Length: 167
Image (cartoon, rainbow, N blue to C red):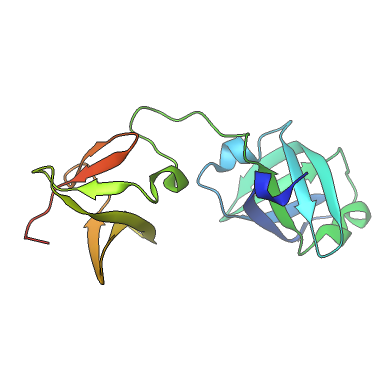
């Protein structure tokens, strides 16, 4: 599988118990979808790439525990510690009406409430309360909370935001 078609969704950070469960640190906002039973995931280390199927998944504290390919023995799965976990870019969870993939929003033109272009969406910064939208305008960065109060509309080719002062 071509690396350009893959997205990183986590890393195997250890084993849990003796029955073959792998402890995963997730890089995904869609944990229950990405690691669902039956999901095809790709385990990758420096020289090894292996596609496996999730045969069991459960949440434990801040991590995910998965069993792969029905391997129910710690000795069969220990070799995967440290591997990165990828999935196909085509395997996207369904979104509700007001949900967006961050990658789809980066690069969009950003306009204020008066339809004046203020810059380009450059990045999303994750904070405990959610996300902050970073808009690049020439040599200046504009930060706007990604909440309904400030995000007025998200269209296919632009995003409309509420700006409190002149940018």
